[in-house]
Image (cartoon, rainbow, N blue to C red; front, top):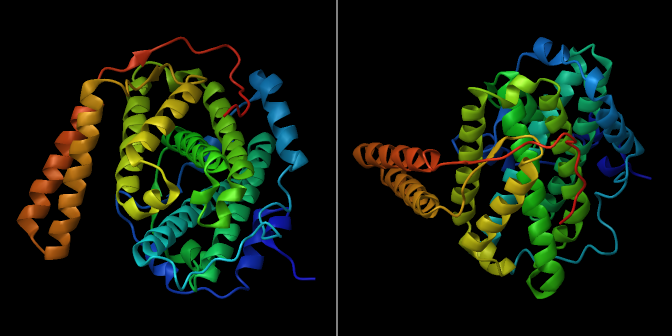
Length: 365
């Protein structure tokens, strides 16, 4: 019987299975580095290895125990619920946007796998290396599953090639915490919102992969819990000047999601989802979840918030048009407008609140 990455017990095993499969031009798309594409990160692994979780063991141990129980082993592979997809007759713009969505998602999942696997390889702190090994395992399965879906469309991402050739961005550990925590939590909010919507409106489920989103987002949720506890282990990360960094990452992650989703109108139309409704729904869920560790949330109902999102999205579209036409001046003016729009978003007053003494949450949506 052929092995599948869904059954792998380590990230290394899952990736070895994937590397035996064919892959092609999707790798070219995954290799791109822009402000909106998923990146590969590296960090100060020695600083990360020095994290002491001894004073939060009452919350840490149950999380690790759950991850060790591996509730999703064997889940991320096709079964009888996987409907046949007529890629040849899929509406061309929808096919283009959906493949772009899958490649972006595969790259993002694999980016986490690479970072987590490297921490496990280079660290000596038992608690930290164990956590990162478990998270790398999950992300490798997710990336492999998306690649399975891409192969049906005649494309796939060469994950081994990405590891060796894609540019890596250095982030200090605290920035890794902020960015990755939000990425995992907003990933949960995105997947569960689509999953619940399609439960109520199955006529819009144009591809079977959406049936797997509930278990998928629960992995994302667990990973977010881990990063919340890593921040709790060092209280200064959520105090003082670092609150401004938290606000920066909240603003950047929300704005990036809004822009990306508005680049895929056919994809969201096929799902029966209005991108503005979807964005507000995801922002609302993510804001509620992030109260577990962040002392602020963004005021997403402030009049300037929606205006700022519209401005940054329009500037980004104009920038893309200017690049297509090769107009340097238009690119410059569009970039400046995008910068001003981001400042408009960043200066919207945030909401302060008390952080609860118990950090751990369970999926509730």
